[in-house]
Length: 191
Image (cartoon, rainbow, N blue to C red; front, side, top):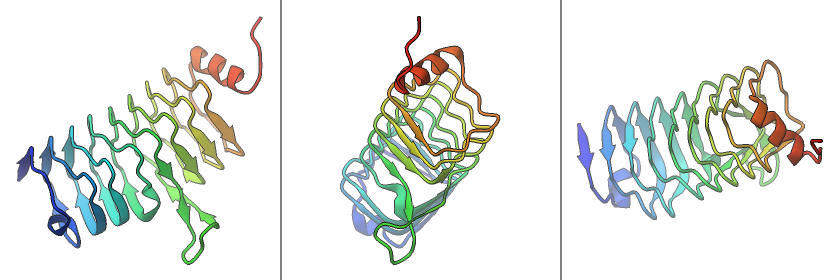
């Protein structure tokens, strides 16, 4: 099943399960996603602007060319998703402990891909980013705090101004340009 250029209303998505559906150039603008589940769906050049994710899950989904900027993914589950070429500027990837407004817990994003995505200004707090692919991704100004980067791939990524605070870095891939950008963002100077 597929939808092309459809403008969705809140009543069409709340409390619904979507399996193996392709959404092409669809608009989900200004919607509240509540008890909505997407499994193995493709969102090709869709728009989620001004939406709120209260309780949703995305499993095995792909988002090529989709606008996801300014979204808070804290109240959603993301499993094995491909955000390649998505525009997700100024997003928040952090989970809070149930009933808490400030205590954080682990956000498992293992095996997701963000290759060639635009994540400028986004925030990742206490995220498990093991085996995550950031190849060619724009990570300028991104904040990573207490993240796990075991076997994460940052080759060809733009990381100027990105910060990595209290992160676990093991077998993490970074090319020469990324190494230089990282050093400069940490206050080092190249002579």
